[in-house]
Image (cartoon, rainbow, N blue to C red; front, side, top):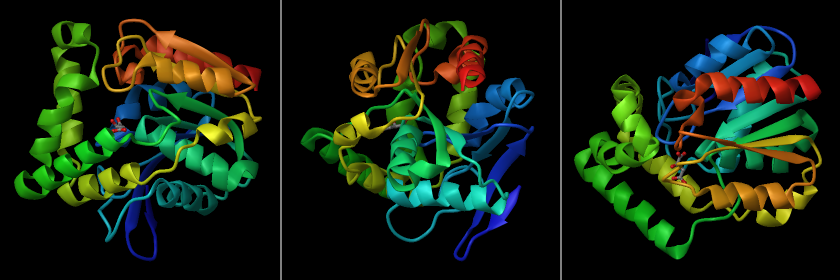
Length: 263
Ligand code: MLT
């Protein structure tokens, strides 16, 4: 579906009915990462999955894609669909940063959170410098620079051997991100605030999912969030890296359905 915003058109998936489940992709990815969730979860929930600005089929816009801006874009989609009841917000990695921003800004609209392969902390000085380096490479060389830097770390080391089709699929998804979208998101992630002090204010049920072999965000970050969020449960998915929803879709969906059933 397509939503005409004042300065751009936002593309999103909208399937099923019942409890709304907003799926927010990571960087530099798009809504296609949720294919198995759209198939497997839309019989039990109303699944909404946008392409964030500059990702997938949603074009880039001027300026930085702050996590707050991306969270507000998601709210505009919910409003456009007439969804005024609280939703379960599920974000992967950068989508998790957006989920935390969504909760901070619109907590009355969240019925639950699912934080996948993400962290609460802000970027370290080293991480900020890496963002700047990658942004200037992408400006010079295009999207391929980000794909080359990130593809070797996206999945579990085992997945590269066992599932070459998935590796190709992830590469194709990343290749669809525009250079402008990549730079805007890198700058947005670089400036995002530390959400750790807010974790103890999260009172909605929260499911934290992390791949045991995540090479981008260590599982320790999931443990930190689990310890700080009162009403949280932690699921570590074996044989999965940064994209457990794609690497172990059956188990991922099972864990999410279990969580939704308890809400
Ligand atoms: C993501 O997968 O969204 C990014 O790797 C997150 C990040 O770079 O911090």
